Image 1 (cartoon, rainbow, N blue to C red):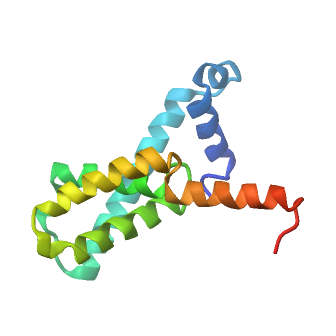
Image 2 (cartoon, rainbow, N blue to C red):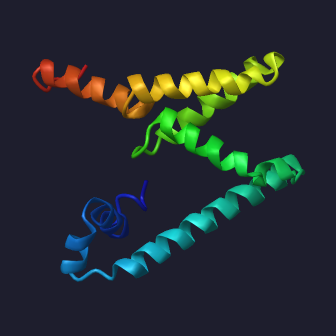
Length: 146
């Protein structure tokens, strides 16, 4: 949260939204992109090493190419552009995998259907749609909060 709302995070948002404008404002876009990549890799490495320490197991399933697709699925279902979205998406996908484990390979088909429905019905992801609904409800009530 602090990184996203820091001046560094604001420059990354500016680069995402309009890279030529960020360049014209004098930001060294390539350096910011490289730093974001390094920061991302460092956090991913920290998360992986923490998982290996906690579970006392380092399996190869975590580095298979399918895992990157699963992470993207979690992010899209939960909601991109939010801090809480990927966490909610991960909870949904992992819970679904645990409860549907008895169905075997059909879990992947069900995940695919859930993904298509989430992308079709919840364009902003689950968290994004909940935030948008909350915003609509607060604007109807005249800005009063409960």
